[in-house]
Length: 319
Image (cartoon, rainbow, N blue to C red; front, side, top):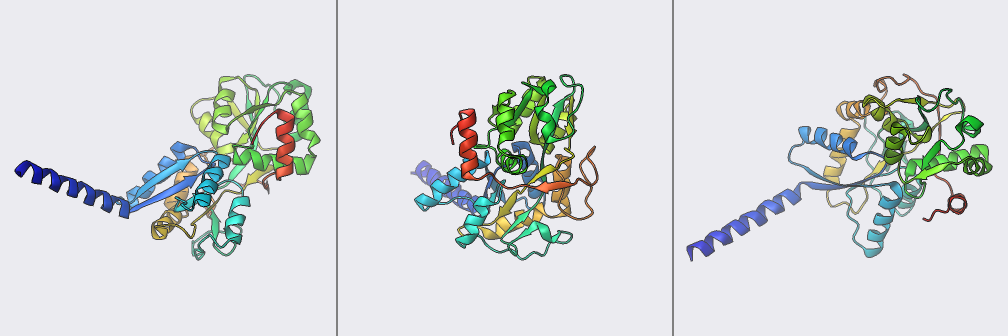
């Protein structure tokens, strides 16, 4: 009997401990940031709030949105905080009144990074640029159009816009600026498609490709590891991809989600972004090491469904 009582007490204690752990737990769905970056942010957050557990689901924007749509259809959405690339899904949530408004009381945050009065926010800046392996390519391109030049034939790669949010924004921006024929010409010149930016950046670093349409922060991380890469900010504009974050109305712990959001927009949170190679959003914050202090860029938006379908047909891809 004594042993039985002991096991019951242990079981109750474990159950009580689990309940306490779950009480201070939030779930984050995130795309457009590599897992080590998210882990660094969570670790910084936990230095300030050691009792809060942050559960993370991280994948490409397409997969994150698909997972969340399925959960919404089933009536059981999980995330307390959603962080994506591209505004389309956030506009959809906002139109359905599924986003909480957080008053924009963040010191040093410019108004252009506050969306719809505080329904969602920008917490870092993500640019799509041209990355070059300098061992394979001697003369750097200067513009997006230069990627069509003969010396670069068969050397260019980009991520799959069905999976990658930044690639979907790049597809929308470049097809609007240069026409969809730009991608038809890139296809004829041997443009390769990889699933994600981290995968193609590693292959670019190894010399499997010579040039890439990709994000800047990941390339900076590869350069810091010693990769022979260079970043080209095209003279016709680096592409600024919106990366909104917001708290949905179904959040079980909106108080904890707001703490995490406020940490991302604090000086400490912004410092972690800069250390990981991102441009910060707070006024006066320093740029990443080796990056221009000011970067002229043009805001992009996701390609339309029709443009994406056309791209998929051209490259033999599927949603």
